[in-house]
Amino acid sequence: MTKVKFTKGHGTGNDFVMLLDEDGSLELTAEQVRKICDRHFGIGADGVIRVVPSKFIPEGEMSLKEDESASWFMDYRNADGSVAEMCGNGVRVFARFLTEKGLVQLEENQTLHIGTRAGVRDIQRNRVGFVVDMGRWQPVQDEFLVRANGLDIARPGQGISVGNPHVVVALASFDELEQLDLARAPLLEPSPEDGANVEFVAPHDPLVNNGVGRIRMRVFERGVGETLSCGTGIVAAALATRLWAGSTAPNHWTVEVPGGILGVRMFATEEGEHVGLSGPAELVFEGEFEI
Image (cartoon, rainbow, N blue to C red):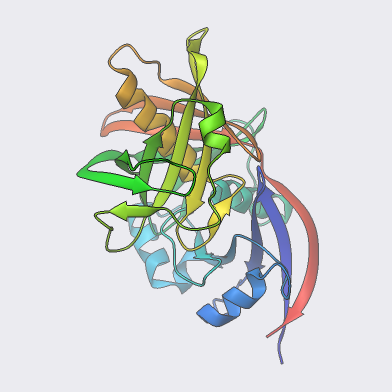
């Protein structure tokens, strides 16, 4: 048996077990990840994040080629043990871990570069916690029909890629959103080969207030189930709603999820439009387990 130290953290209720692997020697199987994330027999979490120097992992070496300052890599696993490309809440918790453990220094005007399987992500501090540049995004041309418990008929879904795949469904009201039963996975037609996160979105009335768009969302995460929050899903939901709202829609959005409220901002860069996500990130307790 080997004892492993962990830190539990969350971003608006989307929770993670953080494992520091400074020499790149920690290898976890999918079964071990599932046991760690089990909320009855394990620590309990939506996913496991291995905090590892980029030089010790092949995907991290790719990050270093993209940006030599991306010295830490976020090796993220879903609760079912599968590998995920990116996690918008997880990367903020990752930044909180690095800074609180003294592994990096991040002043108010500085940028932290973190390697992920979706590419290098840039993070800064802000008044609510951290803001992360989620990079470029793109709509998916495939048309989806989405069936879910609590919906009387299948609804159209908008595909969005923000480094990982999403399908966003528009609902008419908060009541319709609350009546959803997401204990079972929504069915997508056609079914994406690698699966997708599915977001259900309902608008505030009015949709835009003082130049800021406002929506409420629930999400079923691929490889996890319904979660209190999903960072990339929040970004995808805001992007899809802006697409539906048309050319006059704002570039600033607030998105309410069961775990809290996060901010989304779309902004132009030389390589195309990027999208940013801002919100809190907390570390809540530490411990040890055996593998």
